[in-house]
Image (cartoon, rainbow, N blue to C red; front, top):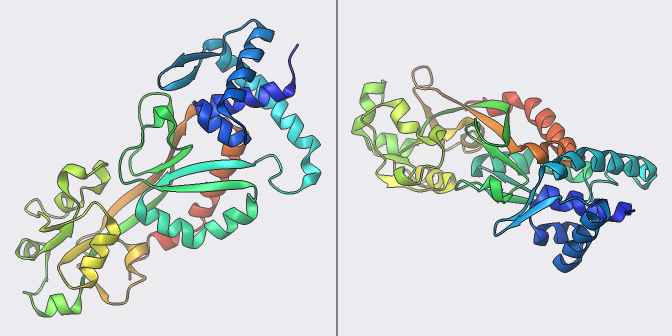
Length: 297
């Protein structure tokens, strides 16, 4: 025999992949989590996890157990539904996202997120490098390119557009930009080539094969700041650039880049009730604001 409490510990470890993160989710110690998992495996006469230096990985029996445990979780949540919205959705959740997207999310969706999920402690991580999804460094990741292999699922969220921008001060001090062929004569601001963590960020080659950045940063906000100081031409998402009247849109009919945000997570995480609710919220909220993500100033 086993208790529902032990199943909660099992689900936490299955979702988090590590004792320490499961312990934080359950507000207990990793020693307690380990003891509960051992007790559950002994009661069921099953090995549910493989222990290795990277953490806890589900065995075949463990993967089969997840569906049953989540049905139990759903039933328990129905019993406690009178406690209020989000009653069964407590604990920390880490979402990794590109910097620019993070600004948009914080400004447009975060207040509603807090209202919808009051018991989730949200951790927003700037996706300035590839996070190791296999180690569950984030529960959900917003990525610029889909994952096409491994135990991960990527789902298209929404498209967005980018254009060339510069200040009037920069344009007044440099040759006119009347067509794409004029661009190589200008100073460009962009990413450090060897630190481009997603193919979708390699903007300059899509604009003109001869373009190379002279001012480089791994941060889109550093690039934005350099552009606002009149130091060169910068490629920016339109939803970010439109907030700054000092930036002038360049060659809008000739140069327009299209990119896509994807929601990526481990397929096991995707099945969790709490994560499904958050994913549905993000999909609905972002798609309803698709026009804002494709706005050129």
